[in-house]
Length: 377
Image (tube, rainbow, N blue to C red; front, side):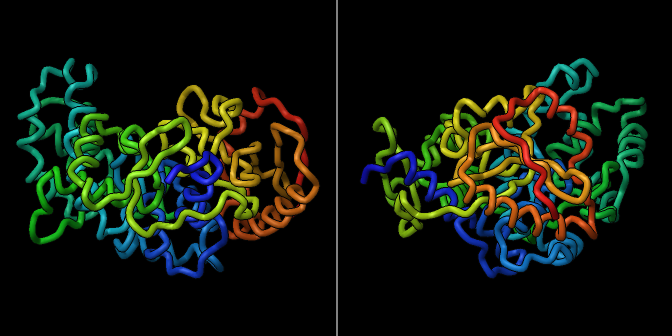
């Protein structure tokens, strides 16, 4: 089967629950979309608000507090919210990359510490973190065992050791001063790394496919050879499709492939929404001309307007409404749909954080605009 770019877009939106809000429980919603990027604490909440019917943020609060959903450093060496069921295999698949990202970093090597120095601390660190610990407590604990102040040792360990973020309160469960816990790992070790990488690849295709080896590598930050090896090992279980320009795509059997004319409602997407970052070719959702506008030079990914399944601008709270900046002229029906979403979003934010993402407002000075409207709440 050969797929057009537009049909690939609709496949992504279907699997990411963006063609229509689904009546799912929170943990099942997280499982369906695989992973929610979570370095900004509000973003998993807004991501689920865009995807789940009648989403109650208290449900995600409870899932985080009860460890049904875990926040940890995983794919792309960034914070993600994933289900507890997926976490052990995801972590095992990513552990080598996470470890290399810190131990081969000049900031670590300049300390004079060896990899063995931090590796030796891990089992004792896990015991220490059976209860919630702050950054300062963990750094002091590590330094006491190294016999010297080595802040980069804890910086490295918190990335690749089996630790997760602990709930600290605030409107979105996690504040700007993180605390940590030992990860709730299963009694038995997960399968070997190769099997875990294959599981991660399978789950990625369930949530973001059809996709290429390059896409999988981009989503995870695994090497392209590791991504290719995982897909090759699964060849007998995967479907092979042809994408635009003859590209080779892989998919799980029976996954939805809606027609390219399937309607897509407008959405006000969270910062760092995973759907914007899951592919080597970001053009599946972000028009190439807009990529540098919404993915800023320091890696910030702005909250976007999704119109007909593609990024069309950005949004931010403004007074009692939502300021929507369109990068192109939009039809009036799109504005009406965005206005409906804005009213719902203002109501959703009211009890939590009406000025969400306010510390990123400086980016708006650099953005072009075909039209700016303040959509009332």
